[in-house]
Length: 84
Image (cartoon, rainbow, N blue to C red; front, side, top):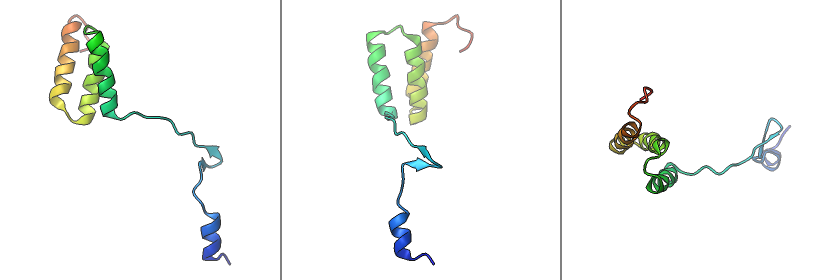
């Protein structure tokens, strides 16, 4: 019979799942990502993809106004791109 003490002592959280090692990676927050892309487009204001990245991030953050502004800026930078 397994006692409560045995369960407590031997059932410790592990960094392994089914024998595979879990590797923790750094994941910046969405606000940090937005700051990064804002910095990029301040240096390179005609970088269309930077505005698209910002649009995606602002959408995830729920700031639809900024998302639309970023998207429209990207669209204006590349008006002949049919993927918009």
